Length: 248
Image 1: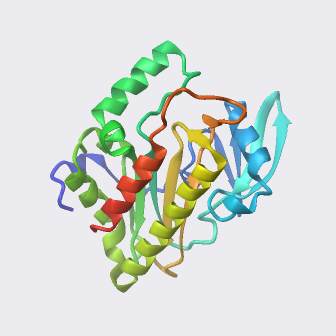
Image 2: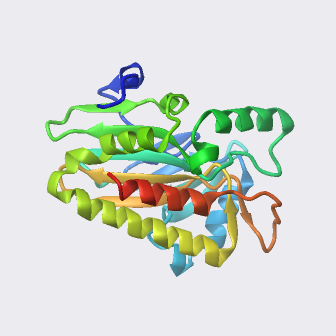
């Protein structure tokens, strides 16, 4: 691992949070139950659950329900079919705050965005778990994003995720590039803005199945109904991330 500080952030024999999603998650086989803190996330799934454009680009939405006055959604568990999953979570866009973020939290997020690659590259590292062929697994804590400041360092971090794939490496990278292009086209077509959403990259080191989805929609704006005056930088972030994957 060609990053001298990485050992500080290694967690051995750990499991990634189910599906990479933030928030309260209960894993139930092929679906996840997620407590939502912002109604926008439910609105996003209800608005887009039947649209063919998003099929295979976001988790499938099953239903929503209320329990003890809290709202929950049931969505697809992307990694449930994988025996030895490897998961990479990338927080996409050049801002993690939006029009409705309160001032105290906004100040915190602006500071963190400036300390990471969020502003400069349009995304930041938000966690990774690697499972090897022999079953050994390790995670890299997301706080390593405070050490990563350049394209070169980011490529080295992405390489840790990709390089054990051997002859399957090019095929899986090409699939990720295709998925990111589809997500980008869908965002442009729908005229959405996303703040603090993620791209989730997964593969199974046993079967070499792979996937890439956009997740976490608590702060999305449908520009036809909720106008945001802030540029989210998501398209630019996807373009930069795609270019870095091509250089691995």
